[in-house]
Image 1 (cartoon, rainbow, N blue to C red):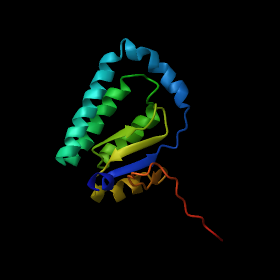
Image 2 (image 1 turned 180 degrees about the horizontal axis):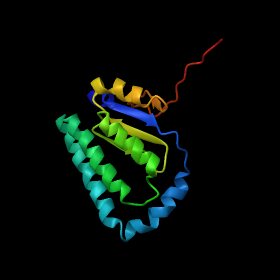
Image 3 (image 1 turned 180 degrees about the vertical axis):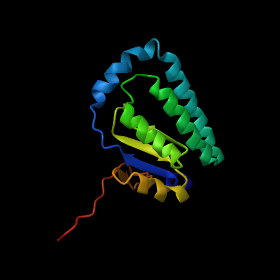
Image 4 (image 1 turned 30 degrees about the vertical axis):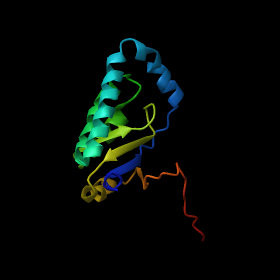
Length: 148
């Protein structure tokens, strides 16, 4: 699938407790941040249309827009290290990305055109890039055992 080939999963190396991050903004979702939630929902609908039309590069740009909106939910979602990783990925050819989960660390999913991925992986040599494929059977953890 073309979308899968252009996505790159990168572990930030930053641990966090999602529960604490989410607590920092979950109560605001009904109040001052309600506009942001509606905007994110609209971006989801726009993303569905983009994927149905097959214009996957636009999906990468949409990830960038959604990242900008998500960051507005709480100051706990991002930090200098997260911003540095994201901005570096954009400078290395990613069109957009999404910090998975509540924020503060964990994994980034970047939309990077396949022909630019090696460059980004090399640049992020101190971070772990994790190969993955979409599956209709749910998530599965696979690993290769190395014997001496």
